[in-house]
Each structure stands twice: as structure tokens, then as C-alpha cells.
Length: 337
Ligand code: PEP
Ligand code: MN
Image (cartoon, rainbow, N blue to C red; front, side):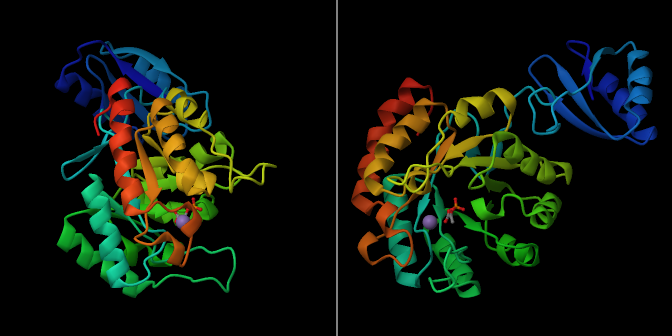
């Protein structure tokens, strides 16, 4: 249920309402728009809360949320969620680019990739230390050693770090070195992990599951939000279809649809979305035109030698020219790159 305050409600009036709700045992979530404040009410016995709120002169109206995703939905939080990390903004006018190798292979490879990412103009380095590989015989990632390399590269380059966590037992280990915690497609419905991430206070990048519907994806985000972590970034990375030419089918309609349904920022990963580096530039532009808040792109100093996802990784040069080409598209959709 949400409580819509009268237009221009004063801080004192808002506090009176939130105090009352808290006294009645409800959780509250405040969303302040330009001229309207909306209070999300969390808890059972909603008829009782609605009655009490309708009687308050400071309240304009009480709205019941019809969708199953309560906190992730626009009904609850009409304004876009904007996530700030240092001087980076995700979800506003800026286009956020996260780029780097699929996996950390060694210190030198990571540093070279990071330098390429930085030279291209991106501010966030992606690189996996824990790798969810389809085959147990494939390279599984350097784990803690990889995280240590990430820490060093973070200091050396000033880039922010996004890296994947695979289970609820390693959340502290990954949080210690990452600015954004990535949940991979295969773990989108790992509810123990999602609950644990609801407890932390760092942004979570939630990739869409291999065959997840939009609603399942938003319900997964709801697990994190309902734990009190309101900083969730969604990432469309392609879904499984009957088409074998591409690794996945990049569902770009998810971008404007998510924008209608949810206030959360959404970025697009055209690398996993297509599996082919040759398709990454076109799909990056398309994602931006569709309204994405950012991109996640795999870049490797030498894709042919990559221990994972070489065929979909851009070379440093290709990455740099892509970012240059994106400037024009960004301008036309009112984003800054
Ligand atoms: C990745 O980003 O390295 C990754 C494993 O992606 P996904 O979870 O989307 O397959
Ligand atoms: Mn990958």
C-alpha cells in the first residue's frame, strides 16, 4: 500500500505520518518527488493502515499496489531510482559503461584490460573472480587471488569494480573489494543469495535469468529490496530462445517495459546477449536508443587467447571506437557519456 501526501506537504507533516505508521508496527519507505511525497507502507493488516491513513488530513490518498512486485514497481516509487557511487550516477542522464574481461586470468591481463577500459572513457571495470561456467572442466576463476588483483587495479586506475558473487557464503569476501555486486543470470533465483544481498548496503547488479520472465526478474529484485537494500540495477543479458546463431536472444523490449513497470535503473549486456563481438556495437547502440541507463561490455586485451568468452569480447581498439560511436546516439536520447 502507498500513502500519497498532499502536494507540497511539509517535512513535519510527513514525519507525523511516518511516526504514526511506525507506531502501528509498519515499515515505511519514503519517496520524495518534485512536488509530491509518497510513503510506501510495508506490513500486513493493510485495511487497518488504510483506514488510519485516510483519516489524516495531510494525506491525499491511499493506493493499494496491485502488482506482485511492490517495492520494485513504479506505483510504489514513481520517480526513477538514481544510484550514486562516488562521482558516478546510474539511472539519471548519464550513460554508465561497465567493461572488462569476462574472467580475471592474471594480474597483467587485468591491468591491461583496465587500462583499455579507462582509455575508452568508462569508469567501471567488470571482471569475474568467481566464474559460473557451464562445464566443470572450464576455467573456474581465480577466486580470492582474483579479488586481490581487482583491489590493486582499483587503486592503480581509480576505476570502480563490479564483480560476481556466486553464493551467500562469499558475500562478505566479494563485498570487501567490489563497489557493485553482480548476481549472474544463473543465480537470479538463488533466494538465499538474494536475501543476503538485501542486508548489505552496496548496489547490486541483478542479471536477468536465462529463461526468466520480466515478472520473475522483478520478483528477484524484490527479494533484495525487501531486505532493505534499495540499490538494485537490472541487467538485460539475453534470454534462451530457439535461435542458435546467437548465444542468447537479446530482449531489448525489456528496456522500455522495465522503465514502465519499475523505477530501477536498467543496463544491457550485448556481449552475453549475442555471444558475438561483431554484433556488440550495433546492439549497444540499439540498447541506448531503447532507453538503457548503461551497458556492460566484455573487453579483453587479446580476445583470441581469452580463457572465457573470447568470441564475444571486444579488443581495446574496438571498445574505444564503440564508445566514440555511442556519443552521437547518447546525444540524441538525452544521455551523457
Ligand atoms: C558474466 O557477466 O560474466 C556472466 C557470467 O554473465 P551471465 O551471468 O549473464 O551469463
Ligand atoms: Mn562472460
